[in-house]
Image (cartoon, rainbow, N blue to C red; front, top):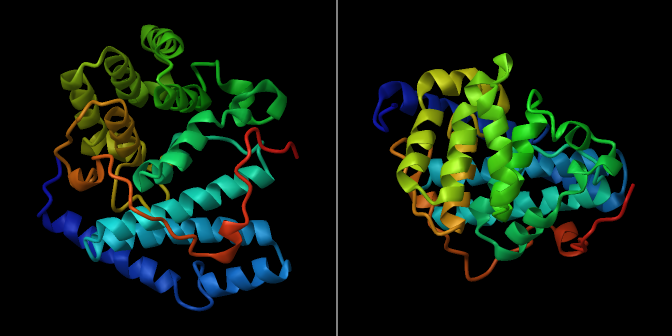
Length: 281
């Protein structure tokens, strides 16, 4: 397990911070002012600009904590990212749904956003036409365990546990590194904190993290283990105060503590629709 003070980890963090700062400069990938200008004038590709602002907000959340140890800033920017992601789903609800999508609503601790994402299952329905809908019941496909994350968030143990048993009973060769996820979900359903923590510890082991690095974005990868954080936050939501001894899962992020107030940093956020179900496009 990586030590928080290890030279390699700290070096990776410093390099990641410098890279994010560079990408936020005018003309670079996270140029927020240019994106906002296209959105406000409805020119170019406003949807793509919102996607960039979503990633920009995640980057700001990472910088808030890893550069300034600012927990409130991390939650506020996670709120911004989660709300923009909700807006993107409102506009195109059939987009695929993956476990990392739940990171920012969970980190924000915003009750309304967590509730919205826990109810939003349209991409997993057959009528959506998305891969999430077509493959959610095939244990050989990634969408199977992504749907399990939604079930865990909802606390739908009756549906979740048999799915985990099916997966663990005949683990697909290419998905061998996802056994810890199903073991975590089964332990969560039973309220077994020790087994939950053992599964989370497995997720942050260097070899397993390396095999699953492709599921981290360039914005989060150097800093955290997204799956371990998502699962740990879900456990806390259900009343289980799990702990993970790893710098990739900051312990300060785990308690459920909403901010007194959240700000819609960008004007278009305040005008967004939060109806459920979302409009079909």
